[in-house]
Amino acid sequence: MIVCHACDLAHRFDRIAASARVRCVRCRAELYRTNAANIDSAIALAATALVLFVIANAYPLIALKVNGATRVVTLTGAALGLYDQGYATVAVLVVFTAVLVPLVQILSFLYMLVALRAKRRAPGLKLLFRTLGALRPWGMAEVFILASLVAMVKLSADAEVAPRIALAAYGLLMFTLTALTSIAPVEQFWQWVGGARE
Amino acid sequence: MTTLVTGRSLGLWVCTRCRATVRSIGPESSRCPRCRAPLHARKPHSIGTTAALAITAALLYIPANLLPVMHTKTFFTDEDDTIMSGVISLAHQGSWPIAVLVFFASIVVPLLKLVGLGEILYAVLRKSVRYTKQRSRLFRIVEFIGRWSMLDVFAVSILVTLVQIQSLATIQVRPGALAFAAVVVLTMLAAQSFDERLLWDTHSDG
Image (tube, each protein chain N blue to C red):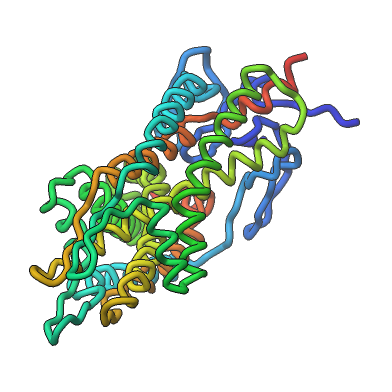
């Protein structure tokens, strides 16, 4: 029996294929998705995301050239600018959604998946899973990328602006994170957990 | 017509975190055996929480749009920018696609979220049984697009950090940005605290 989380309709299944996507017959919400994905691919994506995250934070995102002088902004620098002007709350929100949530997502996935690959359940796995679920709507890498483009277009009217290496890394990070969450959907994840020991 | 059976009528609950279907052991809440998340038949105090957050967001939507979000100072200009004036200046600049994007993300999306949540709550309160499918689709759209309103907050944070060239050009944050960020957070929380099943519960009361 699977009950729909969105409309409470009960569905009876005899058997579900190893790679399946099942929707609720009444409200079309996704009931169940597994993709028979290889856990190694998920780990590779998480490791790639970590490298991209480091590059995205270590180098400048955007450069602004005025009168021969160049000013650059980094990811965390963008939040510090708000903090310096007395908007600490907004600064915290920016750091949280653009930096902290993606980092926690990458590290938790790596930690849990590496253990699951060795057929072991990492300590704190259930807590981490719930934390990731709660954080998921708050990770906003893709919104930040678009905002960088908006800022560049705004400035391009009066100054010379150029994207830098971290912007490319952050853009790739956005895709890697999306791929990671779709390669390890909830049911798939719990199947891996089911095959591991305490 | 086939009869539709709900989880509630079978004594089955769904975990909101891991979506496991669990046999309920009593009226009071317990924890999910799979992921240990708190289990409830329905999210507790869903309507009140969603309404309170949405009303607060609706009130803040006014200063978020009327107050300036940033202040630009150069040799030639010394001006405040609201969300809307930012969109207009992008359009004047000829960047139409970007102007449309910001207009949607910053003005249409928050309004759609507030009106959408209001409509959905009103439908639940008067136990409407019509258009439930459409409302559930509307709710999923509201849930999905919520994050995109952060666009302007991020853009302002980049601009105020980058454009700090003393004597030439500076950009400062203004209180509108704070109100706007609050609207984004509050509407996201409002959508998260709403229990979509309330829309469907009216269908299975008999």
